[in-house]
Image (cartoon, rainbow, N blue to C red; front, side, top):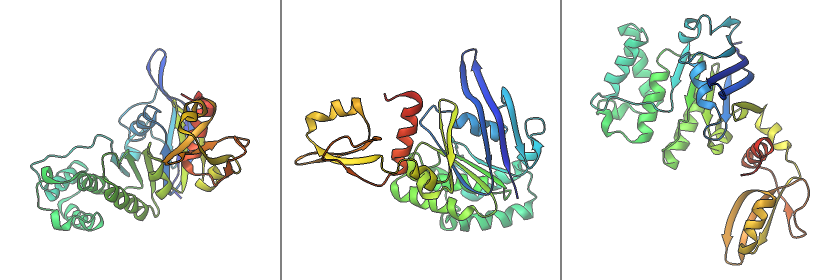
Length: 293
């Protein structure tokens, strides 16, 4: 079984600034969601795994081989969709994928067969000969996934893939990632909890360059059993409650604010316990590490 192991991985940008610090992780096939706020270190980690950036310290091990010393071992089986993925607007999808296939070293026959297959997978057959400049954000992201899959990678890395997509495109993209999992490792980096909730079999929570948790969604949810509450409060009480508790949700009603709170004990006689969500867990762990803002 394929394995990706990250040991004591660190990236230092300046003397006192670390993008990642002593990061450890081991993952196998399936979708692993890397979840954290903007600036948490997700993209730094993704770039090192994609062999674009060298770590300051630590190692990346792919099936027993050291990727930092021998990056080509991973590059041959890697697919990468970066956060700032761009396309050539005057090329069609077919032309762009042919160009990317040539860069990846695919021969012409293999490239043509693979491009035909992938246009079906990402549902772009009908638009394959249109210039990419006229594509929607979601269509461009699907072209991005297609180029990442050209070499049928064992490791697929996608960095913030649904930012800027409308709700329908986001759902379609998440379903596509789930369908692609199989016997490959997919690493989905995002700050959008619902993307991870819908696709990931394992979740890694990261903040300030450090790993906070690595567990299944079910295990993470169990952490907050009996610690999430909701009740109705007057709008004027909300600022004081925000200073006192982790508030993970608010809904304005005609009679006041319906709020959702993470707390070890009941915050009010009127509060009722409710099932935890991954959003609750996420906010709870971030607040534990760095304090509420």
